[in-house]
Image (cartoon, rainbow, N blue to C red; front, side, top):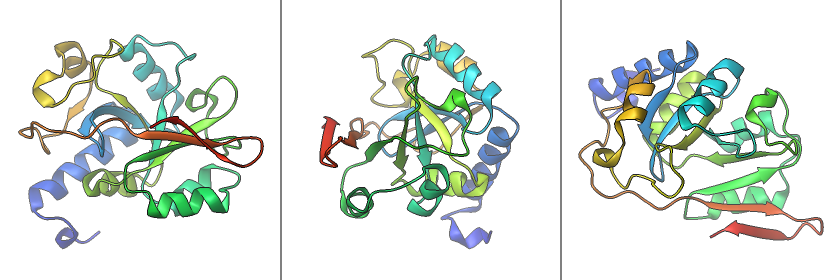
Length: 197
């Protein structure tokens, strides 16, 4: 990868460090295209279990996955309906879609019903380290208590900061982040159903 693809050498270095942390099974804290998140390599069951433990969360409440592109998405779901693919290219807000036929993923990355929720990331920084990793990451909001989503880096609780292996410096000084993503799926009639708008 060419260093000029990034705004600065520092940002390039951080992308490399995040990629190495993820590859080694670590947890990273980073700003996503919605809120601050904690993530890990979606193909490493032990890393996903660490994330569940950090969040004090059961498998009844699965995480979402982030991919860098529609092309990567197609490597991990059996079929992307044309309606969904069109929506992914033209939807302005971050969009998480629930898919019924995941492939090439461990059971730990799936919901209890065998589905998986995946978002094509819209943030360039996140896209960079996911592309560098070459695999999806599991991601979740950087909080343990439901409803306590941090609006900026300064609101992230110490137990989250201490529980991860890498904390991104990118966008730490920003005080405004987007809302949580829209969540949608196709229903049995192949109509779009919006679960969270």
